[in-house]
Amino acid sequence: MNAAAPRLAVVLDDVAAAAAPLVWSSALARALQRELQVVYVESTSVLDAAALPIARALAHLGTGWAPYGRADVERAYRQQVVRLQALMQRLGLEGSLRSLQVVRGTLHGAALDVGSESDLVLVSTAARWPAAPAGEPRCHSVQVWADDSEQGLLLLELATRCARSLGAMPRVVRARTQVEPGEVERARADLLVLSRAAVSARVLAAARRPLLLVGRKD
Image (cartoon, rainbow, N blue to C red; front, side, top):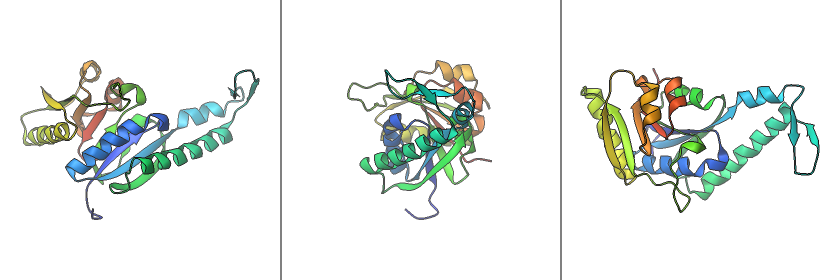
């Protein structure tokens, strides 16, 4: 892929549950001819909690509580990045991977802050991935919020291509300019597709399924 190719960013904060979003984002990147950008979020709230003088950790059952500080969290984060790199290599992402970016903040904030080089952003936490007997989540349905405008029709076309690449069926919800958190919270499709301009941190926090945000950052 050339240097000017648009990117698909996948934003994650849990390396232990990263295989599913990496597999899905890789499949979407190939189908939509995007380079893949992986954004790993290190939680600032965990760092802040570790800085409290009362912070303690229990290393193993049967041992006592030991002091746990920011240096311990920093060390753990470095180890997580190494594990993430090994996982990406094991999944064979080298061909589509453009970059691995490590940021600090919150998952929702990082998803909204992904730069304009990425016009697609896949975001999810571990609890929001549909279960599958074999361990890897299967996508059976894709729900898209779109209106009858030209931009809405383009969004619908892209969501349909996403559904095909994941072997799923698309479902359309006619949307207003903004999508309400309650609508997203009640959605039960395996993947939810929304315009990036219609999404807020409240919407991201309400979602119980993976989200694909479409459009570049203003």
